[in-house]
Length: 249
Image (cartoon, rainbow, N blue to C red; front, top):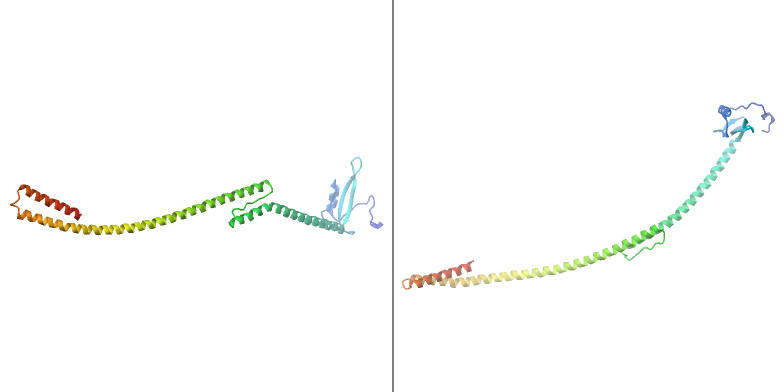
């Protein structure tokens, strides 16, 4: 204080408009500051207190200091600005490092993705080559092995399809041959049945004549035949009927 009338002197009693300050000073044994700004006839400030001791350890008194609120706020603003600058600088660094590491880590995945697209488009001869960490190298090797297996599977599938089509063609040809044979056999059966009908008719007619002639002989010349002749006539009749029955069946 520069105004002598406002100066405090040794022995003066310190008074404050803040009762909590007085209560704090009676038990203060460490450096402390007020939680809030205090306003008095000198203006608005933030107060801080620090006890000081004699060499024998006995507390001699308490040093108090008031800092203008404007200075405290200016220091806080400066600290805030510094913190913001540091924060955004750190964010920029973290972003750049994250982008760089992400690009480095994602490069093998990008290669695998592009390789997958090429294979999906039918280029089964494509292989992925990755120089990097052990994990990405193992992943690339596994991807290439999977592609080899897929290529072999597709080759086997195409061969099976080709063999199946050939078998289907052979079966179709065989089926057509069988149909032709069936038609020929059906025609032959009709011809054979027609021949059998004609042969049956042609054979029945003379057999009926033989039977009638045998009956006439048996009736008209019954007194002329001896026992052996009659037996032969009956045997002839039976043979004729047996032949007729065979043809009829």
